[in-house]
Length: 385
Image (cartoon, rainbow, N blue to C red; front, side, top):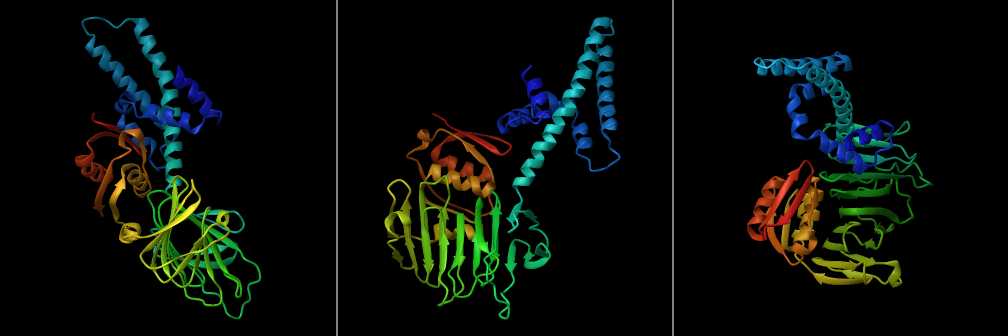
């Protein structure tokens, strides 16, 4: 049996992510769920007294109840000895499977919980989870306090003027899908990070040197003014030099373009493959860099659709369905499976604030007309025709 082979591989630690997903799907089968909802509750109980032995005993009791029920059903026809032996034999096998299966379930659920945490990678390489619901906490680097955590905001201490920093020490903030986070750097610059983004930055900037940070994903920047030390945001393809400003950068790996939208002030955008030729932006302009042709195009845009995410608003203006789905994946922490060719020319305009993912899809569905099936964090979409 395929599932037994996968269970054996899992116990040996040889399962791939795809195989673990298959095991997880096995757990969601109707007959497993119907076996006993109470058992699942007992299994997930945090009570230390609920030992493995007690849980297995609980299953045996339930199986015994099923056996008694089987006997009652067959009162006019005695249950054969071989049938009883077979049922008990499979009951024993089932206990092994259910025990392993719930172990797999707990393991995969733990992995999902791990992915939902905002994390920070410290200079020594260690990674810490950030408790975004805590009212106030302190972030330490070994024994030194370096920042204060207030809910969804990490605030680095302002540099002591009497203390001279000679070496740059970096931290990296990692925000998973379905989350947003903010960081205030040691120079007072305020950065909003969108879902599925990361920012690498110095714990303290060095006076007389340019202030450089490294972004993957999307971030909105309010840069503290400093005429002596320039501020530069680096992405994989572009660098954005700041001249005192507010702007948004979107640079996701799975998107074809990198967009820099200027809200206030002035920025210069350039890439190394174009001899660092700088494109200067004015407010309400966007520099769009194509990863395919390696060129920057500057246009005036309506900036609210590019920065609405800061206020937890989804705003689409005549956007492709494929682009919308990517944004929904990041915002809600889900994964879409669909045929891109079926929706290649479809576009949509809309605004959503507190709606669930189902509400959003049902609204879009009135225009695009499709079917969808939601299975945990995966959503499969098919055109009705």
